[in-house]
Image (cartoon, rainbow, N blue to C red; front, side):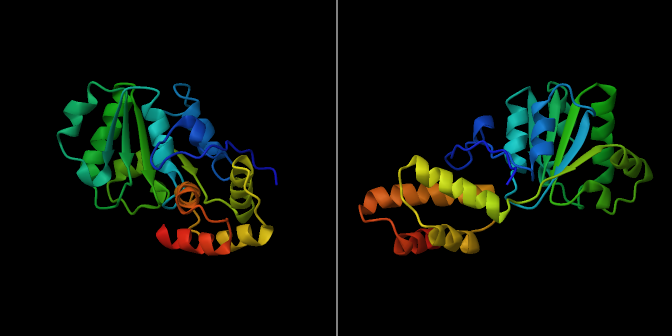
Length: 219
C-alpha cells in the first residue's frame, strides 16, 4: 500500500494538524489546506461523506488565520458584519436550502475584498441544483476537491500501528473483525481506539475478541 500516514490518535474533536491521517484518499485536500495562504484559488469546496475529515481540515485552516466558521443552516444577514473583520469564511455542511442570493453575496465579498472562502459539503457544490445563474457561474469557477473514506488497507494499518505502539499483541483475524464492523470514518476509528484503550485499563482483563465486541457496541 502506498498510503502515507500521520499516525497519532487524538481525543474526539481535537482537530490538530498532526492528528490528521493523511492518505491517498485525502492527500489533495490536505495539501491544499496546508498550502494556505498560497492557494491556487481563494474559494474552494471540500466535499466528502460524513466522517471523512472535512471539519478537521476546516479546523486546520482556522488555526492558520482569522476565520469566521458557521454552519450553512445558521447563515443570515449578520454574517456580513462578522466577516468584515476576518480573513476567511468557512461554511460547513452546505445544503441546498441556503439562500442563493446570500451565498452569492458572500462569494462576491470574498472576491472583492481578497478574502478566502471554504465550503464543506457531502457532495460537490457544482452538482447542487442552484437556480441563480450568476451563482452557478461562481460555483463552476471554484476549486472543488473530494475526500474518500479510508480503505480497508488503511484502516488495517492504522489499527495495527496503534496496537503495536501500545505493545498489544493482536492477531490479524481481530483486525479483520474490527474492519468489517466499524464505521468507515477516521473519527470512528479514533473513537474505537481510545475507548478500547480506556476500557482495557479499567477492566484489567486480557485483550481479545470479547473485549473488541464490547467496545464496538459502545461506539
